[in-house]
Image (tube, rainbow, N blue to C red):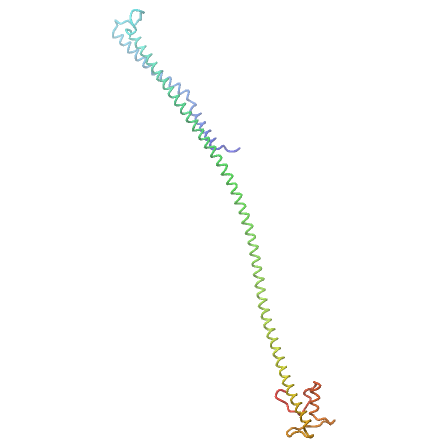
Length: 274
């Protein structure tokens, strides 16, 4: 069972208080009236005792009322009784006026309390509506907080995945950089070896060209000697004839023409290059 609201709880407590306070209201009212009557009776008895005392002090006055013989003012007891009744009537009138006044005040208080109750009920209705809206807003904000929490968790997961991918890519990039450095070094070594090989080939070609030019010049000199000589070589140059009657210079010429055994001659002077 749901707990009552604070307005209902306040109304219940006020009702309990009024019930406790009004439980003995009738008895208190009866005692109040009894006290008033007792007061009036005491005043009446006091006036009667005073009248009896005056009668005892003046025995010539008669206490028996004879119609038409004397007025009521000549009888002290009757006068005291009338004064008591008038006092009681006046007291009752005052009490009635007080009751009317109290009733009017109570009516005014009742109207004011009804108006206050209406205002409180209106304020309570407004507060209840505001409380309902506040609860709805709190529920909406809680849902948004939950959605934001889920979104943050998803973003954290995505950020972790991206972080892992970045680390993996950085490792791959480091490996690729290391591989590029290795390939750069290998390419530099291969290029240097290729350049060295080409330089060696160029050196060999230069040597071959120099040798070829030297041998060509020698061959030309031999041809010139054969064409212009009388069968004897120039001074300072010794030639020999092989067993088949061919001079060594001719054999050298044939060797150069065939392109084989360039070093087949034995008695020709060699240059420092070959």
